[in-house]
Image (tube, rainbow, N blue to C red; front, side, top):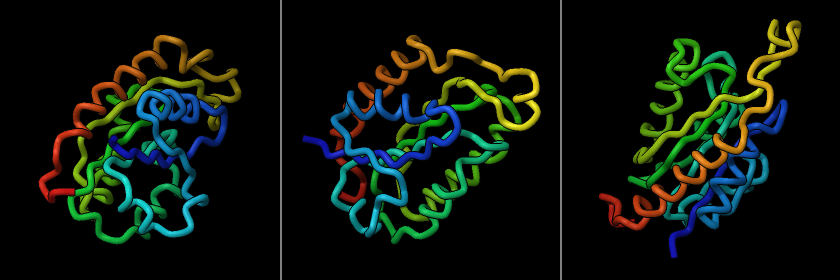
Length: 165
């Protein structure tokens, strides 16, 4: 059986938590926030590690970024990322910070195997003045897409990594 750990940050509306729970349930994953991980070496016990966050001005939450900075070398450990955001992942605001987070992961020796993003209710900054955008998101279709993403991850997680972990 493949052991999966999901590390996530969900702050404002619980959008990312909803997606994390759907992915986690489909994978039978352990789910933790960075502050709940006392020893980063625990990641070495898992076959696949997921990192999820809302997107804040194009970046993953700073606590998740600091957590990744604190990790030891992962030597080819398979990883995936997922995010929720007020704008599409193709939007320039969201694309700007993504390479930085991905570089952090690959710099720690992770092998990125998949990415998932969905729209989510967003009231950050000026958006709160207008009542927010994407009300009701992530919706049932978004969560179904997250579950489908997780099902594809199962097959990826079963294949041996280059490092033999």
